[in-house]
Length: 201
Image 1 (cartoon, rainbow, N blue to C red):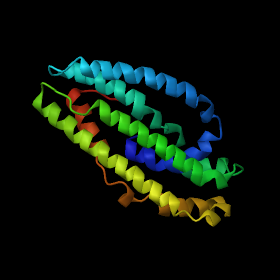
Image 2 (cartoon, one colour; image 1 turned 90 degrees about the vertical axis):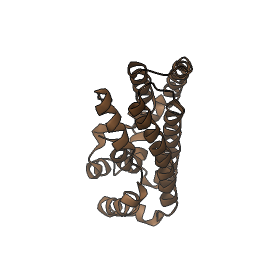
Image 3 (cartoon, rainbow, N blue to C red; image 1 turned 120 degrees about the vertical axis):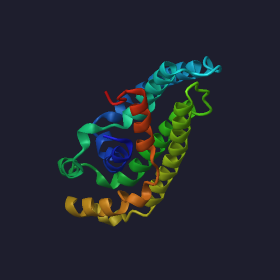
Image 4 (cartoon, rainbow, N blue to C red; image 1 turned 135 degrees about the vertical axis):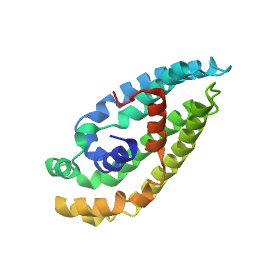
């Protein structure tokens, strides 16, 4: 599953997921992320002469695993079933929980963006692809900001309605193509193809 699809589903559903136990591991995950962040930055600084393909592949993989992979909630593809199965949860907490997750996701993508910024890469094509990926990651951050604005406009009264009505409303309000203008997935896939890797494995 690619990131824009992940985000569109993840942003609408994660507040329910967080109520089922994910929050318990937040502090532990942040500690692990800080350790990995230092490793990635050290690797970036060690390659000021210009990274070769293998070095770039290692940095990209570490950064993806640390910042992007946690957003890949593959088991929650079916939004309708997820909402139905969690119909007894406190759905009125949706707006605030949603905003917190948006902030965390934005932070992750910003950190990912930092690890691939201003890299010196020996391969010219790979360097151009990386620069394009960086630009799209910045657009993705703006798209998340647009999601936050959309959340502010959510009619809280609708969240007291039956699940089907809530689902229809959220799909119409929060999962809209005009909220996702970036081509992050496309650029990342081009890099994967060029390097012959699959970051989701």
